[in-house]
Image (cartoon, rainbow, N blue to C red; front, top):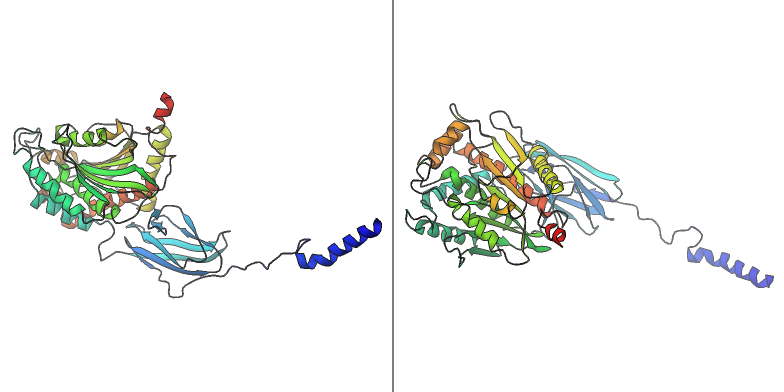
Length: 447
């Protein structure tokens, strides 16, 4: 018996070098070799994509600073601070936002964080139109106030029955069809025929029934509306919000998203938030709004320095419609956008502030009263100048340009909003079911 045991042990020792047992590796360890192209530029253009060329024999990570986002293989923006890539990937795409930072940090490492490349990107302004751009937004408000005036709600009885409004809605829908939306709808509800909203949808890759939505009301104050007696252009109230919605609409329609994203122009806000309420009341069964961003009276805000006699131009952003934990997350997103990503240096002449507050002064009320998370953007424009044009004939583009100190300044103010809202869109889209506003938990509480 002992002889058999001895022969067995001898065989094990003889076979060990062949089998790789007793602590010897079956294959040599791969030594990481990661290089970035010698021709890699360290100059990045604000508002444009940046491409990083990497060669690696192992999977690797790219680390970014605030001020840019990753673009994954599905053309979806990612807000993670680092992203892991297969060794087969050789070109990394990032979006540089139109931040006020002068430089950004970027590095490449192994998945175990051994850094192989570390660089500082110097930022330069873009001479071409960016993904979202205040210059294009100015062209839009110029078009809207020139070509589509008298957008009075159809359910008001003292004007043209809404013919001008409906013509404008159909005209804008035709423009939105060129943006790349999967569907553009001009609503005609049987039980609310005057609520002619324009809504564009880009369906989500992972969560098609959860909508991230932005909008502003498309109607303007009709004749005899207090306190100013009505307006034709409504440049500030709320062609400005319609302008922001259109500018971000063309960007979100051109990309892919985890969630369904949508932009809207609402009817009949001036008569009681009727258009947005009709939209919420007619949501298909099983479809929900993950978050809504509202823009109302936002012509004049940071970084515009008011000319003498006007201002200050404060931009306020209020969050509502979520439980305490999600409200904290919403306000943290705003802090990250304003302070870290955009790096705004607001002053007493053009302050930016945010809070958690529920009010029914605009279309966001239609959403948070139905337990959907909301962000409401509002720029008062200073007490004196604000009351000069509210619902009055002086609410026209020429007066807005005067109060901004020029067309370029007005465009800069729009640039603040379109980039801030796009950044928020990206952050919200990168969440899963852990962020749902209040509606997500309400049915469970009732059960």
